[in-house]
Image 1: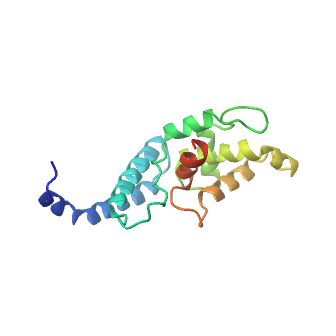
Image 2 (image 1 turned 135 degrees about the vertical axis):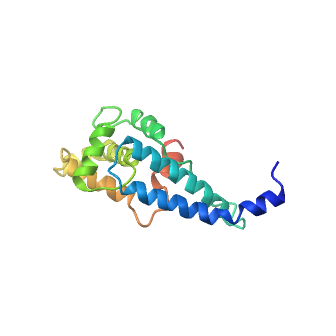
Length: 170
């Protein structure tokens, strides 16, 4: 059972833990991206987000949207497997490995699972429009659109996870 003494001792360490997690995230972002690095980043990001939940203001409005679950590789696989593409196909158009190659070629630094989903989501929803405008077979178009979706400065943190939870899974 957590007593008030235990809680009082734990609270000052929260900032140190967040700083440590931030340092680990920065450290792993500097490494070449592979599955192991992506898993570590997701783990540290999840822990950091959990720490941040402690910091949420209790006076927040009851009507504000709760934070979504951390987006995982499992979520990515589930989502892409269910995609109904505008070209009549189903599922991911590109593999996770292909998405990682595109990331490397374009110097895109983000969670590979999120980029993979965004890349396939853009294809799935907009391939007909892209073909109409002569870019339907250009991976660069889809990569730029996926990056723009993920790096939207106006969007709340964890945009893709929120999109998945509130739009895709509804």
